[in-house]
Length: 156
Image (cartoon, rainbow, N blue to C red; front, side, top):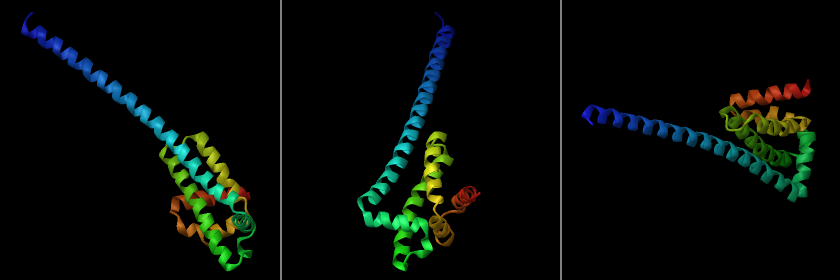
């Protein structure tokens, strides 16, 4: 065997190795994407479940949520502050989920579920009062626009 043939065989083996490496990297990237999507779903579910647990465990907090959701303006000043903290906690979760959806780590079906929860909140007149008075001042313009459109659709 001459040097030219040996060089050609070496190049072929090298090319096969490069192709195999690229395939491996592509498979790993796909697996990582899937793992990221699963983690995003679990995190969004966990955060909201922990929030709900607090409402379930505290009848007083649940009562505040119910009254504030109906009519934020009717709450006493101290209850408005407490309700604001409660709503901020929820809307921070909503904002994170919306961000994940826009980044592609939360798929359409998972976003549909999260958006249904957002829409449930926005059907409360007190939530809309809170949003217009306080909430919209605490989030970025893209999320504010998303919530504003959702409120318009809810009221349509």
